[in-house]
Length: 162
Image (tube, rainbow, N blue to C red; front, side):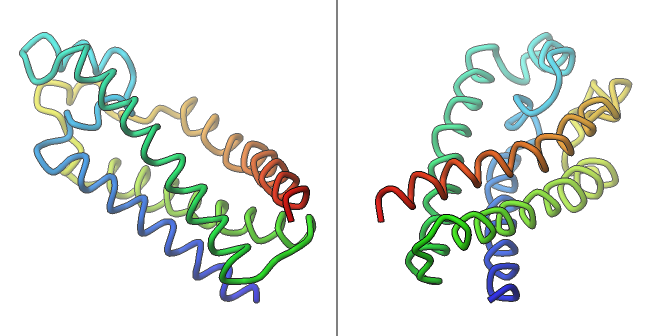
């Protein structure tokens, strides 16, 4: 069961990568909402994007990704794997989200954003690295404590419903 759950986490990580690839298909400015406000301003000044587009892309990203991720995780854990109690639901949700978090931290943030040209926005190179050490620390903290809290909340809700 643990290998299947890890594979499901890899699937969720692949979904994340696909969403990111779609977001930067016309240039990294399409996902500038993931960067700091300083980078946003640098993209707005030369007309690469607007504040309205940044807000719209951020809203769409959250409105699509969060429900999609939750639906994926709950389908894997409760439909595919047949979990019916809090503990089995919790650990499976946690593993799937944690594997996705590892993919996000190492593959997306460290490698793709940090070591390729795909995410570079012309005119903002002096603001690199786009993901600061402080931001990385926050992401790691959320990726452990936050994912545990989300896993507990989802498993608790599902335990009540089932």
